[in-house]
Each structure stands twice: as C-alpha cells, then as structure tokens.
Image 1 (cartoon, one colour):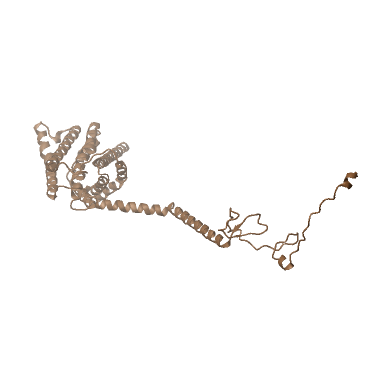
Image 2 (cartoon, rainbow, N blue to C red):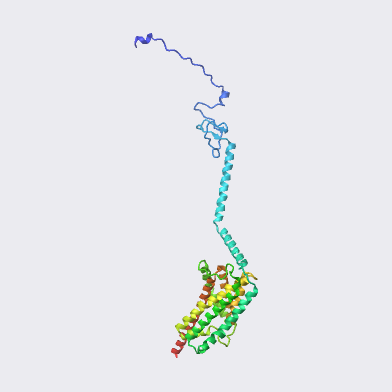
Length: 378
C-alpha cells in the first residue's frame, strides 16, 4: 500500500435516515413486499370485462391488483351492459338466420305459387275484350255465316260444277278431293267477307281483335293442348257409343274415308290441305276470333269459352261428335284466351285435324291388313 493512501482524507459518510417499519395493523392492508404467502385476490369477471386501452382514464371506473400486469379492467356495471348488448346482437343474428332459413324453405315457395295461381285465375275470370258492337251484330254475323256456309256448299258450288259439265257423284277420288278443297276455300272467303261487311263500320277495331303473332309463349300452350288429344279421342268413342249411327252419309268425312280406302296419294294430300290448313283458318277466325271475344260483353270469359265451344260443335252438324268437339272447343278457346293469339288456336286446331286424319289412315290400314289375312287363310 502506498503512502499516499494514508495521507488522503477519509471518504465522507452519507446520512442514512432511519426507516420505520409499518405497524402490524396497517401492514395487513398493504401489499407485502416479501416472498411470503400472498393473500388471494378477489375473483374477477374475466369473461365479461372489457380491457381498457387507456391506463389513466378518469371517466372509466377500474379495478387493479398487483399481478394485473399494468392492465385495468372495466368495472362490473360496464361489463354487464356490454354483455347484454352482445347477447342482443347474438339474438338478433339468430333471428335473422332463422328467417333466412324459412325464406329458403319450401313453404314460402308454395305460398308464392298459390298466390300466382289465384291471381291468374282471377285475371282469367275478369278479363274481357273491348266489344264496340252489341248482341244484334253478333247474331247478324253468325246467322249470315251459317246461311252462307249452307248456301255455298249446297247450292253455289254444285251449280257451278253442273254448269261446267260435271257432278260430284261422277268424280274420281281426286276430283272429289279437289271439289272439297274448292268448296272449303269458297266458304272461308264468304265468312271473311261477312265479317268485313258487318264490322267495317267499327274500324279501327280496339286492341286484341284478330291478332296473329309469331312471338310469345303460345307454343307452350299449344303443347299442353296437344296432351289432351287422347281425352278428346276417348270422348269421341263414348259419344259414338251413346248416339246410334245415322243411316245417311256423314258430312265431310265419308269422302275422306273413301280416298283412304282407295289409297290415292294425290287425293289424300288434297284432303290433308282441307282439314289441316283451310278449315282451321276460317273456323278459328269465326268462332275464336269473333264469337268468343264478342260474348265477353255479356258474360264472363269462362262462360264465353263454353258458349263458343258449343256453337263450334253444333256447326259441324254431327250428333256423334258433339261431346269431343265441345271439349276441343273449350281447349282451343282457353289457349286463345290465354295467348290472345289466333295463330295459337289455329295451330292447335290443325294438329287435332291432322291427328284425326292419321288415325283414320291407321285404322284403314289395319282393316285392309285383316282383310288380306282373311283372304289368304281361305
């Protein structure tokens, strides 16, 4: 040790104040600084408390403890209100989920279909055409048409044929088919001329009269109508069984059957034009184009369809076909009333006549086959 260390003055002593230990009674209220056993802190509602992001927020009541790590927790009153708000939010979300699940269910869809069907039925019952003429004009047109139909087919065409030097009875199958085609064309033109003459003073006609339209969903209606053809055929067999066969020739059918028996392709083609083109055009113009809408002036649409169908059946002058023709007239009237398109009922009428024509051909082929088999067996 050097001599300088002994010669240096001694280091100054700092004052050390005396620390008084806390009284045992007050020490229990203060947190212990030792490593002894700590008194358990009061249980805190961890699940419902909200952590405050501000350490010294005077507006928010907080609770602290020594082992909180510097975090402060919202008091029980604030946490309970937050819990209630959260429960309400969860409840509302559950209600929304249940409502969405119901909306996606089958019951609302069935309810919507039911409402749409009821609305369609109501519109179908209440819809009417704007008819500018009265019942007098309706009766005038129909009486003139029936008289012209009879006069042309029974007097005018036979008179012209006789003037030309031939009669219907002496004609061949092709001649009779051509005779029927010319008669049908003349009757159709006469009916259209009557409509033009009687309704000319009401021109221009209101919207919805004698409409022909290629657009729209009328093809679906026609397809549904075709599904009812077997039922019409069944009614035809029932009607034939109820009404006995008349001794006289059947108007408009016997010549067609004779042509099928003769297996003359030209005659069959001419008859096909008559039944699938000419007859549907002028019959639909008269019964569905004029009569059905005109009747809506005095009766609801369903009754107008039924009345026009009955007139359509009676105009064929065949008691054995009244039932199927009334039903067919109702079907074609419904298709026309739904589509407001004469082309729809014309196509359906043409398909039905073609169905009957093919059925006659099939029946005749079966009969010819049976006759051939019987001849061979003999």
